Length: 410
Image (cartoon, rainbow, N blue to C red; front, side, top):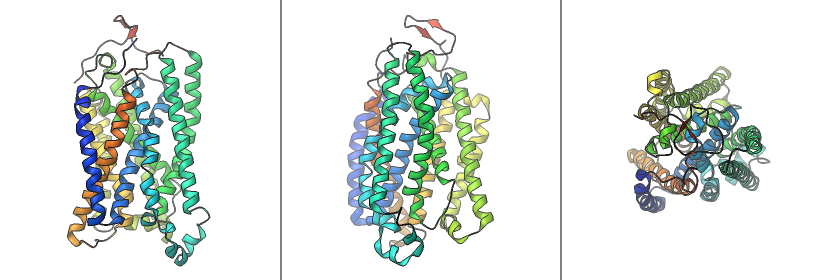
């Protein structure tokens, strides 16, 4: 039997730094309320929260996909994904500032704007604060339940092969993927689309889901790279598994690009006032260059690199691609949130961008620090590999049951 996961020495060393950095970032963020204003504070908090919540449920979605599809690649990332999915309760608590700042984030939460805008007034049956909070609580409870069920059954499987538990995990994942897509699409409407109540898109929720899958898989690949020297994980890191991980990431990137372009094309062809608002804000000033960067660095460059088989079969190279993509995921979430709030220069004039991005960075690091500490807490009490189900590779007896042929990690 595998021992409980010994934390990577790099991560263990970073724990105290993360704790101190989290406290400092959150303190500076609170001070920023009085320097930049509440609008920027809540906007930055929303951006950061959306990124880390997307990573949380994205991890759960990738784990469920592995239970459905199988393949040795999933054994490398499954325990990291389960630990990430278990962070839902922490993200639910960190959602409270968004509730408190709803009037700074959403036009439908401002009575004066509702009274003056007939479109918003028409949608108040759905877009009202009480019902919005109730839906959020429902989303969190369902996501938490599914993450917990996946985790508990996976750990039970470590006691030994059990076809009934494997079947249960398959059934949970088949139902869970549908629930995840539907609820996250609705949550995307509540938390992002409703910031521009006139905007209409039937595919945006699925773009968000696919974006979360990219975020999660990039993060999981980086976790494998950080734990590559772990004695339990190292023998399983094979070139063909890394190649499969690269192929899955390539698929996610293509689907993200396909849906994003489809949304833009339909909006451009329709050219209706209610539908183009979102893109007008994101082609104003410097935001058009952010959009161009997403096209090239979130799709075109990763697409070309992930087509190259040698790059996918070396962990260091694959991790570098994943790291670049993860950075672009941060950029896209800013692209989703910020232009709605500040399509033009703010009260600080030329310095406004500097202060705004500083608040974004502090919020991202502060919430991310809490998330990462919770992630490590869930990670440390489970074996690094799911050892109760069959790993389909050529077995070599190392005294611990069936294990793959060791491979060189670069």
